[in-house]
Amino acid sequence: MMKRVAVLGSTGSIGTNALDVMAALPDRFEVVSLSGGRNADLLCSQAERFRPRRVCVGQGAVAVRDRLASLGIEVLEGEAGLIDLAQDGDVDLVVNGLVAGVGIRPTVAAVTSGKDVATANKETLVVAGHLVTELARKHGGTLVPLDSELTPIWQTLDLHSNRDVRKIILPASGGPFFASSVDEMASVTPAQALNHPTWKMGPKITIDSATLMNKGFEVIESHWFFDLPAEKIDVVIHRQSIIHCLVEFIDGGLIAHLSSTDMRLPIQQALTHPDKLPSRVKPLDLVEVGSLSFHAPDTARFPCLRLCYDALSAGGTAPAVLNAANEIGVAAFLEGRIGFLSIPNVVEATLDAHDRQPGDTLDAIYEMDHWAREKAGLVVEGLAGNGQ
Image 1 (cartoon, rainbow, N blue to C red):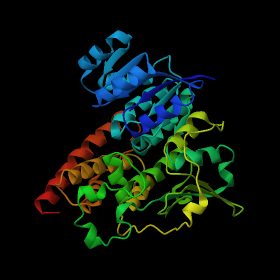
Image 2: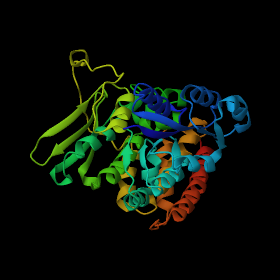
Image 3: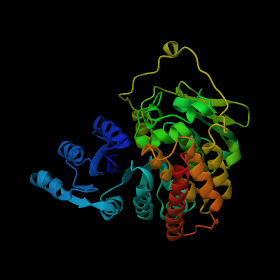
Image 4: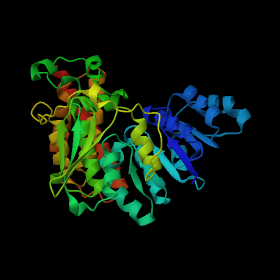
């Protein structure tokens, strides 16, 4: 069956890989709309190739309209345009590859319209998982993870009851500072932190991987995607990034998903489930891999993972504060204003100052998000003034 697809964030890593997957399966997917942020040139190139009906650009709409005028493609702009694409009646599936908080409102618009949403936007479920999952249930849409760890878990649990699961295990590469001491991490530069050992990603998610915040976000996501309590979601450090997830069942059996480090595979799995189709991903050579290793995460050196479990346990607006403070801390580190080890300090100080609220509406979530960004900014100023 042909699926009509809107790809939000089509110029980013997830978006470009999703388009590559769909280009290889032209009898399965029709690209109805695309959105890009500031990379208008790539967005136009994608539009010229896939010929969607509409595109949305973060800025520079006039230039995009001029370039695409001969193709009759409608050009939208900004958040309003994203929401319009997400709730378009001509779309069956929304692929959300947007980065950070910009992806939340389009996801809400899509699920409220009863659409299926395949999302790589972690912030949506981290910040408002309790609201978004309820909206999806109410309006009949399906939320599908686009993630190298969560997508194969989702596929596995689709075949089993949660009652059969003892726990799921999320492997983390450990980032570039797995073997570094606290003293060594205190002096790392943004360039060093952006040098991920196994994955090529955008700067924000790469720093989150280095701090293990990204893995903590996946813990929170897993809670909402799979309806599992925190005590059934574990993290293990697996340097080779070959095993992408494990599911342990109550009988003691353990299922592991192994593959090459190529995001096109989980994207194709999510978009074509339950079918298995040939892909462009290089098959895994186990002899070439040789050996696999596992380590317990060190939450003393990487406290962001602990902070995520704490925020999930607290619930309400705590995860929204966690996310907002982290965005401010990561941006300040990339700008050279604070050190790498100060990122979790910004998050923890903001959480400590937070007066937890139920967060039972999106407006309440956004209000707390705004407060957290202001508070985190003040924490950054204090740390920067002290040379931290």
